[in-house]
Image (cartoon, rainbow, N blue to C red; front, side):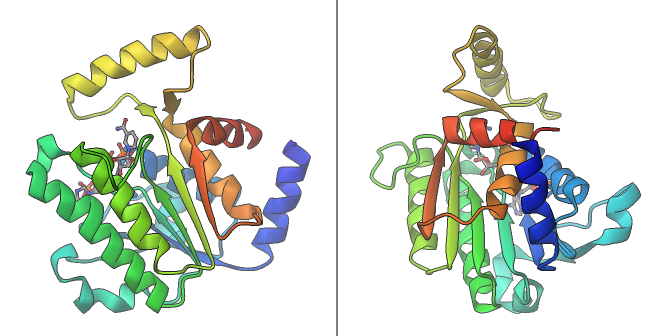
Length: 237
Ligand SMILES: NC(=O)c1ccc[n+]([C@@H]2O[C@H](COP(=O)([O-])OP(=O)(O)OC[C@H]3O[C@@H](n4cnc5c(N)ncnc54)[C@H](OP(=O)(O)O)[C@@H]3O)[C@@H](O)[C@H]2O)c1
């Protein structure tokens, strides 16, 4: 499997594609950027975010940054032009931003970014959504995640991958007590083999990159937690 993956990486590398990442300062996004750079599959990597990030080592030389105001994204259409592949690991929480703020970021900012990317020539979009995302859900979080999934699908990318991880296993810098408790609980369960509800962020990042190299039959794919887990493992390393 590792040899196959290397062949896919080489094949993809030769196509000299470019990508952008939304949310590269976040927990998943940081690992996604690391993965993209380590596997060296893109000839150009651009981070699009609300602030300039301090990058170290290889990233500081090979990564471009575009700082945008997500409230006025139309003014920043140029930042979204000319990328082949878009990755989105952006999001906030209701606790951090309030209900309206959560919808604004996780739906409006994400959708508008995808629209501008599509208009700018992007052909593939990879969205980190959530387990249970459902536009008909009565839970705001799952409803918003499901709605943005559907609205992006309607944009008609040549290829669109939706990742629905369970609880992300990460030693988060900021304090989120509820999440911390869920993580302890789920990482305990996954240690004894019940891993369908949670996933380490490294596996999500690996799966997003590995999946980019594949050529699925469907335009739109939904990768549930277990699919992310097996793709994340098949990346080897
Ligand atoms: N936590 C979980 O267990 C879980 C489970 C399933 C799915 N998810 C989803 O997975 C995605 C990634 O989660 P994560 O925990 O890796 O993310 P995270 O660490 O919370 O990072 C969030 C990213 O979004 C950006 N962002 C937040 N608010 C913003 C705003 N108002 N304007 C512009 N950018 C903003 C942040 O930028 P700054 O650094 O500038 O703030 C950061 O890059 C999210 O969509 C989340 O809902 C999470």
